[in-house]
Length: 348
Image 1 (tube, rainbow, N blue to C red):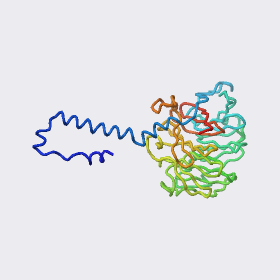
Image 2 (tube, one colour; image 1 turned 180 degrees about the vertical axis):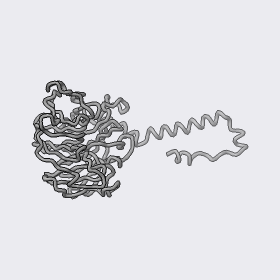
Image 3 (cartoon, rainbow, N blue to C red; image 1 turned 60 degrees about the vertical axis):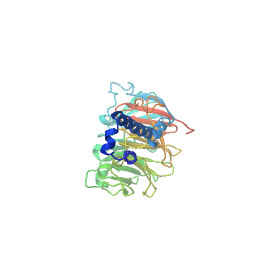
Image 4 (cartoon, rainbow, N blue to C red; image 1 turned 45 degrees about the vertical axis):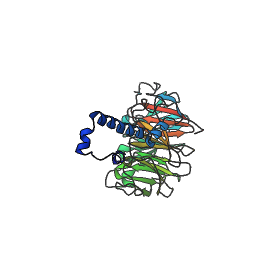
């Protein structure tokens, strides 16, 4: 843009011309150039996109910074919570820093904890949750496992990823989703791939090249995963600053976002969720926002300002991570600010 303006500026004047050109004229000319640049920036598509971003209709329903006491003397503060699922009217919040799952009611009261103390699952820095409506599935990240749990925390199945899908680097599952065939999709950022497992843990497919890649070739540190109602998979491609949509066969067919630090771009995306209408929600820790895209990839806006009508107002979030859509509610788990619930507009 600056090169374009400079191309239209006059060339350096001759010695005689410079002698007659007053200093005040130089100052005025400089001001005019600056004014043109400012007007151009203000009229740019980025500015209009940024203003439009504030208008995405999502109203804050509730915010829980820490669950209320209701389970003995257990410490209730979250420590870098990372994900959430809703099952049978209860919320299962992954409290990663404390290596446990906190079970809460709709008012935020703590009902129980799944932390291995009562013979249930022993968790090691777990980073993702999923559910099939009956069981919980946990990416037990520090142990290179995926665990299937009853809602009381009892383990029904353990999938050891280090033996299922050995790689050059230790398998580190950080994203998890239920595949349309009843199997599991697991992201492995340290090996730049997504694993597709059948329900008993057999490896069916490796998605991605296994090395850092971009475009249609693969991923660079894949993270959060989601599957829509039609069976398409969405992968947060963290270091490529995008979310990619995969066909049921596993090929990349669409991209949402691009690297950047303005509205409509992604700086450090973490998780993804898709609603019934096909809108795509992406959490971004560095931008402290949830970006929203239409099914065709158009940018719709962002969620997470204290004043939804002011793009410059302070963010509600500190480091948004896990996303879950249930009906017309979007749940956002922030690593440092707790759990948020937003009511999504049905008319948008």
